[in-house]
Length: 231
Image (cartoon, rainbow, N blue to C red; front, side):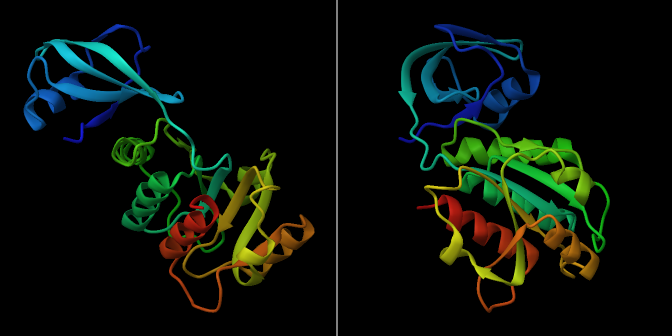
């Protein structure tokens, strides 16, 4: 039987004492775990850990760890997604699915045609945590606070690309041997403005395309993430 996975903040030791009220409630009331039931936990490292409940109550749990498994990353590419803020449900879908695929960070950006200016970062972190638990990842992506487009990329030290209908076909220019830390800039439903395109040109940010089909923003970012990360 496949064991359930959970992210915890505690250091991994032989016996882990856990007092997180939300986690205890989830284990007792949602999953209805009992003493001796087995689960898998991870805390952002390269391994996941299997163990059983020695104590499980509404006040605390003691988890005994008896197995460690190193998790091989499917790729060493660090993918940062600079997504223009779009409708709440669609942005949440992006965080969920791109976390599953393996994105390292989400940078919500405010572009000239952004439909919104803010997001519920706490909820996005919860979605990312649950997607990591479900998909077998051992790390959580970083979700940044919304920033203006120019400010968001000012300190980024990887290679930047902007996703645009008229760009070069992604598969023709992307090499996993060369690109280790990359950022993809994805515009809102209305696309980039001419001012923004001029800014990208001045910064010598290359434009990439997924082909001739016209995709919604959430479809485009999920597709580009899969093409880059799923080899």
